[in-house]
Length: 362
Image (cartoon, rainbow, N blue to C red; front, side, top):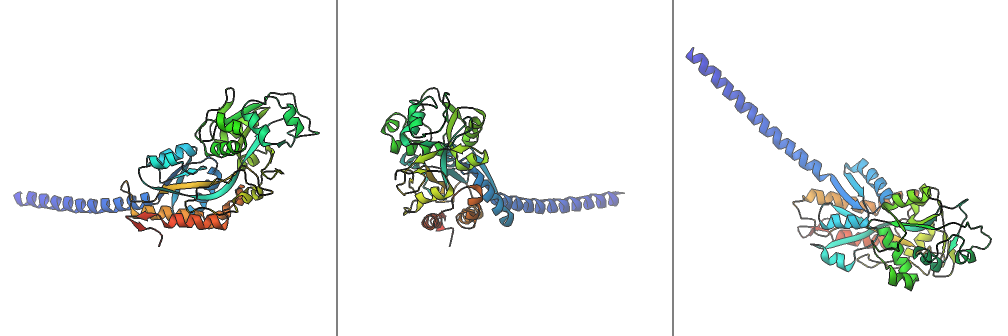
């Protein structure tokens, strides 16, 4: 009996040791798999301006790479803050970092353009006539100096167009927005009055009585639902909602309709190595004046917050794909692809990104 009990206990011990060994081995394998999976999860946040093309790019890249990218369309200002707080792998903004933002970052941040877009002036009027607007008229509308659609200043540049006796309802972005930065950057260049009273920025103090909506989506939705409304939105959102958008008088004196081609003309010049350049109010003959690059931002040194080299490499390889193969997604979604000089500048930025002081891209 005693021998039988000892044999049973010995057998149980062997089973426990065996199961424990199997369990420990399984845990290590599971941990490794979890680490590998985490390295293939990329998180980004920011620009609503770039949301349609980024969503498509990340989907296409994931099909062949196995990388899953979660992009949060929360506005450029919020995206920059998320990056500064190291809560995301990359930020996206329609405005390059200001000197103040750059100095507030805990480490060096680099940025590069991913495509071009246009900020258009869309409106909702009976029969939606095609309108022309000068810089002066546009700034006066957003300064609340022109409050009626049949104002003589609007009528003077739209001879023969029947304008309604209707109040103008101005809508702008309520969140920190790169689209706002592009628009106010333009108006500050063409109107001293606008520059001194509102100024340029992702988040500015608008005149009383204007409506604030979150995101390009929110502004587009408000315009669509509100007769008499006018606002600034990205070209893709205007086309998706079948909006009529105004032709704007550019620096060369021509009224130009917003298109991919007219937006692209603004970006034909040289691009600085850090890619920080404003291209609004171009003096090119047929350039649409409110056009801009949109940027992705990331930390130059990727060895932080216990990030693995594999994760950093996956991120940089995906961003490299965006400025090359990913450009095929631009035109179908009503963005302009990067010109050659912008691609070269973006390549230089990505080649400067390091892990432990060594370039990730060899």
